[in-house]
Amino acid sequence: MLHCLINKISIVVRTNVFSKLPHIISGSVGVQLGRDARRTFSLSFSVRCSRPAVGGGHGSMFRLSDYDCVGFDLDHTLLRYRISELVSLEYEVMAKFLVAERGYDADHLLRPFGADAVDFLQKGLVLDFERGNVLQLARGGAISKASHGTLPMTDGEVCACYGEEKCWEVASLFHRDPLSTWNGPLTQRMRALLDYFDAPASVAFGRIVDSLDARAGCVVGRYNVWPDILDSLGYMFGREQFAVNGGDYFPALKRNPEKYIHKCSAKVVNWLREIKRSKVVFMVTGSNVDFASFTAQYCLGENWRDLFDIVVCYARKPGFFTGNRPFLRLEGIQEKDELASDKLQFGNMYSQGNWQDLYSLFVAKTGKEQPKCVYFGDNLIQDVYTPKKLELCDIVAVVEELLANHSSEFRHPDTAVLASHLWGPYLRGSSPTIWTEIVHQYAKLCISDLGVLAQQPLDIAFSCIDTLNPNLCSGYHISEHLEEN
Image (tube, rainbow, N blue to C red):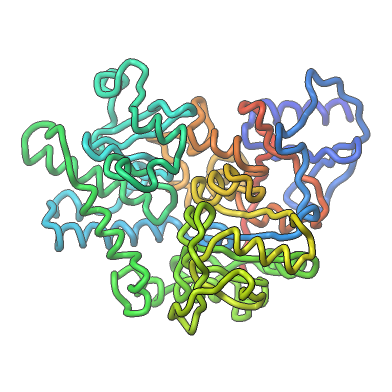
């Protein structure tokens, strides 16, 4: 019986990239039965390994109890969206703006956001503005798949466009330093669509290119449509729009938040309370204070502020981690005077700011010269790459797509959006993407959602990502199902 069980576990590990791996603790294997994490038992073992099972430079095990300060992003981390509804709303707002305000072809842009559009959309795609191409980048920065407009390109077409190695110099620069395309001249040449706030731009971009080619009767060759798409994103998400009920996007969320936002599970809320009893808990979000307060209250409950020692809004990541922009005192939703680091206090919300000043507050409050911090976030450039590259804190990447690519009885309600047939897996498959590489190099863990950790004690040990072997799946931890209130 024991022999069969071990063989079964070995088969799962070998064949399923995203299998839940057993935790290795004190010379035993914790085996989980079914969906109830409490139904476990231990097996003593002795296994001969070809090399130690370590997490590269990150260390082999992750325990939340090892940290002094625990931080969270809000959107797509603490707050889970109903992604199918969200991207449909965003595309509709963008398309109407681009037709009404920029004069683009209604027959192309106002087509229903149906199954073909949903399958074309994927987080992490890269837009080549001038050529009108949408790209998926492989590990190393080469192009693994591409489309011109919304039409998939053959390997021959990709090679004709970018060379036999399928390398675009701008993508290569992005691979070497993702922040090189965040500001400066390269922002005029490409855009990586990093989350579900801007991912629908790939569909708008593709359909506009299709319309321009159709009108010309041939491939136009050079395009300049991104500035208009960027304007449509500004129209939707400009931080002044929430207060004035503008931009169509915020009014829709205000009218019907339950259509677009999941309530956080009681398990996660109680887990946050438990963390705060012994650690500093902070939130750093890019959302403006009014929108962040609205969504956090809906998601986490009326007393959501009590879950955090300090909240930073409109953080403008990745600049929050790289720069020294001052914190601004808030009076309601209005930004007021600048604050030095010694003026920051627990129990408050602030706007903008920088990591160095926030860390100085942690030093003062913990009484430690170098308090150990971990940050949970979903944006692989803003939340994962940047703070870890600068060695500011450890990172847990939250990647909901793991649930859509995991073979289990649970089927994610937004699988159609999260798992594209056209592009393949977001992280891993037969050809791992550039995002797999970033996760492996800069994250301690990659989890599907916070429920993975919330169902366990703070001192439980989780296997870390092995930075030395990108082909191993250690460090990926996936919920069997999702819960909400």
